[in-house]
Amino acid sequence: MAAATTGSAVTTFPTDTQILITREFDAPRHLVWRAWTTPELVKRWWSGKRGEVTLAEIDLRVGGRWRYVMIANGGFEVGFHGEYREIVPEERIVNTEVFEGMPDGDSEPALITNVFTENGGRTTVTMLTEVSSKEIRDLIVNSGMEAGMQESLDALEQVAISLR
Amino acid sequence: MARAATTTDAFNAVAEPRRRAIIDLLAGGERPVNDLVGLLGLAQPQVSKHLRVLREVGLVDVRDEGRQRLYRLNGRGLKPIHDWVSAYERLWAERFEQLDDVLADLKDNPNELEE
Image (cartoon, rainbow over all chains, first blue to last red; front, side, top):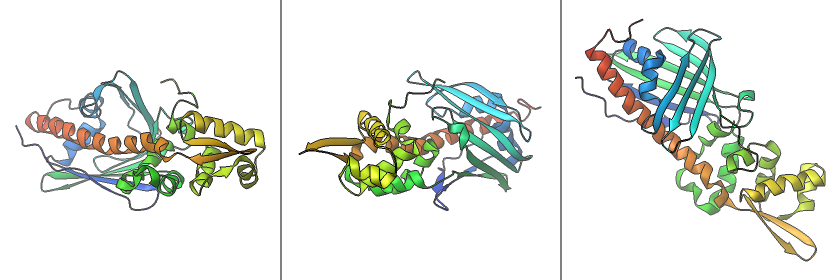
């Protein structure tokens, strides 16, 4: 059994409307790609430790749709879906993403660019999430101080994901 | 998944652009309704409707002073959004740990689920 990477993901905020997550995996790129794009494998990791993935649909072609649904441990359903915009096998996937819990999420989906690079048998994945405005981030930075929310301004930027 | 009603929680309440504008204005301090009506360029009933939604989810508080109703922001109401954000980062860390396990299996059994 190969040793699993224990390194954690690094989250940065390149611009006001972007979130960049970088993570290295102890596996060659073609295997990371397969785990990322095969429904049966996505079901084994996408829910983290929070529940069970009940649906993973992947139509991996430009214009094709994807949809993942999990039942969280609390019993409620969490669904995301989107469309593939660009696919370079084993290198790059660009897709939209909509959190199904948000009203009118489909009108302004986030755009996710996943890039896979291999170095010495290890693979780095970068996930760039781009949202449509920094409105929500600014809203909270400007207004949330009295509740002690300044404790994690970096994390607050990610609110945009949930509110697009 | 069924969509939550507008008044269910802070997430839904701030999804509406005019309600975000109201929150922005109240972030600068307490204001009477008429102030908000003037600054937003909306009809008074519309502004009142949005304020009612914000009150129901605990994002604004109201008090009467003389003949005026004064509204102010309740920053604590935004905490669920903050918590969701923190949870987002932890979720991805968990997902990647699970993915490590899947990749370890694939390295041991390279033909698993080969297309």
